[in-house]
Length: 206
Image (cartoon, rainbow, N blue to C red; front, top):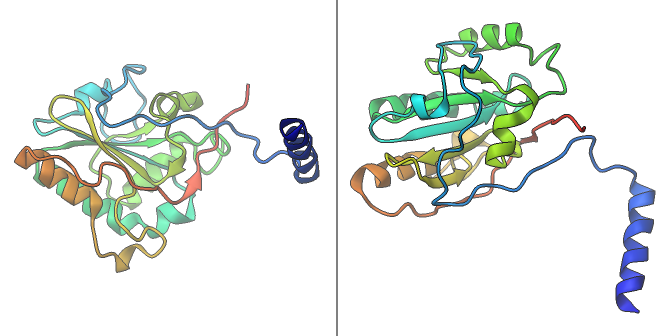
């Protein structure tokens, strides 16, 4: 009886609220999972890259889900630059992935990505994720959101870049730097997961 009442209540609340979102979401990867194999010959708005695996360097790979338009991405841009520089200095490959389909013909188009990457001095591939294929493989749901893989291609950290994504210049812990340091030292990453805070990735609904 309780189950029936709960089900009816859920339907009633859903009807009042209407659709929560016009876009789907996906389950996230877990620490220890391998870099997903996704489409090769990816379209990059900056330097070319054939696959995620090819973008990895001797100490691993950092994958960041981002875009041109999210207010959280924009205010975290100095932190993105800091992460990019730190990864490069520590021989960790990096790619930035734009999975947003809502404005693919406008503010998140390929041409707009080229301009945005130039304005932000991106030195890593900035990939167009057609139909959110890469985001679906990762289970990425927010921008910005990062996934760090070690030299063996195993996921060791996922989540936010630091402990204050809402006010990124006032952070106390830079999670992504700590995770990279642990990987290089051969230590366990702690924490392995944090909560990413930002805009939802806008997927197409089939």
